Amino acid sequence: MKVLVTGGAGFVGSRLVSRLLDLSHEVCVVDDLSLGRAENLAADGSLGRVELVTLDVRAPEFVAVVDRFHPDRIFHLAANSDISRGTSEPRTDLERSFLTTYHVLDAMRRTGARELVFASTSAIYGEEPGDLGEAHGPLQPISLYGAAKLSSEAYVHAYAHLYGVRGWIFRFPNVVGPNLTHGAVFDFVRRLARDKTRLVVLGDGTQTKPYLHVDDLLDAIFLAIARTPSPVETYNVAGEGTTSVREIAEMVRAALELPHARLEYGEGSRGWPGDVPRFSYDTAKIRSLGWQPRRSSNEAVHASVVAEVERCKRSS
Image: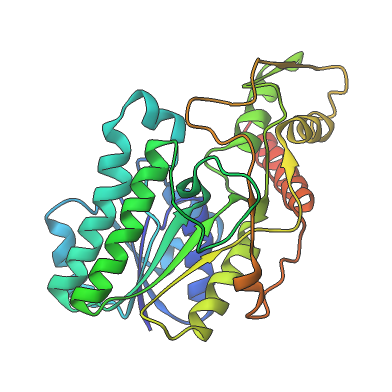
């Protein structure tokens, strides 16, 4: 199968590309390298085995790339992943989280590509109590990132109805693993490695969310694609349990062997405006297909902390 991956040089994207190559697919990666890095593909041994096109998917040339490569399936992961930046620069998520999706979908319409796997997010739910299922509504995101992803989901459904696109929507939780590019684990390791006396944490540390290892996420995605024939299917994906920011900070301090470093917390339960301090997924739908994460939330975070500390030491 020929597979095109937007954002394929990012954290999740590079791991996805490695999995696709292991399955003997022909892969084209389109990434503007604003957040992704060619080194992420090199780390998994993928760089010399894929076609890497350095391009923003909003560029007019993107349609020509899709037409030439003629993919059987597109995995669309290109998006702004810095939610806090979207608050200070409001056009960021319009341009990089929504319009990227529009351009991918319209390139599919114009070239005849028919299958799309879309990376969505828990942020589309907003700040809601209880275990959130795929049919929960109304959906009221509190970040521009969540709003852009929700709008993108709506466009996937509309293009499926109007133009015969077949889609799978996966609402990611906080995803961790090797070769991180952002997030609490990435930031904490680097902050504490620079200043070994203290770690400044945004918010009071009580922010608590489900974390999922990237390999468990990919297991869920590939299983769902194989087993669901509907025009568009949506899945929540999350691991067992939750992990607090305070727990992550303590894991990082232990992994760096700095037991006397101070953990300095801020005020309030939000790390930034638009942050959802806590949420819980209902994952019965993906589990009904037989998927089970191999790592709990805490286990996934701990493995990621260890990997990130080792990577930080190698680069120093």
